[in-house]
Image (tube, rainbow, N blue to C red):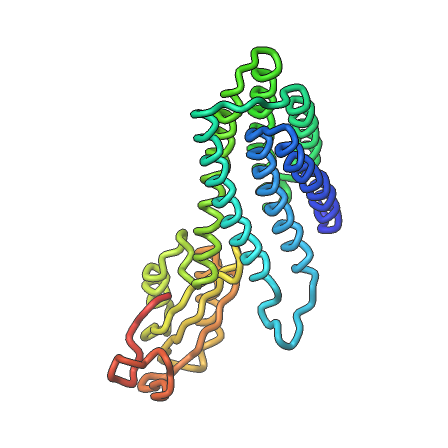
Length: 303
């Protein structure tokens, strides 16, 4: 699938799901339905995941400016973090309201709730079908598709609550199923916050072991030593490595660099910056990484 088509699919799906998330949000307040509010929150989660996927596709095509040498990839991380915090707050609100309704059940407009939830299910099925056709060809689209699948389950739960209220006047079905939908959102919200903070704090991605990479670099022919090795993410899936590599023969540096790049790629690292050094080279005292160490030569350390 070409990039233009993936942008089109993601854009249409985003408009469909975000628009109806707003409808469900308003409908949840009007019908007094926590299940609809929960499903609206879930659809907002999917909207942000679709937006992140869409932004990622667009940023790939955007030229870098003089002050944006890494592009604008961190914007999608910030958006994801805000989304995760919002979802945790929403889950807390829904849990509080559900607890109140267990104590004092409130009437819900069942038929209207059932209608809105049913339309939501149709919207999810349409968006899911569009994304499914392209999911195997693009990792961003595949991630968005999986979010829509879980949201479809949320719509089904809201429909079940609507049926219980409409036909059996079982008003407790609304808070019960709203909790069930919130539990679907919670793992995703937690992982979004965790992954976003990991990127913003420039931690090593969990799937990468920097000590293992250092050991492998030391085994490259011509390499004497490795220090100041850092691994972090610009955004999810875009991993960067920097390191100082001491070599025995600077004339062989091209072969050494090529070997290190191939090694890094085998670990899922997309970009490397290597400083080649001769034995005896030391960084200047002004280097901030030396503060508090009491020496000029760098210790080995990883971020």
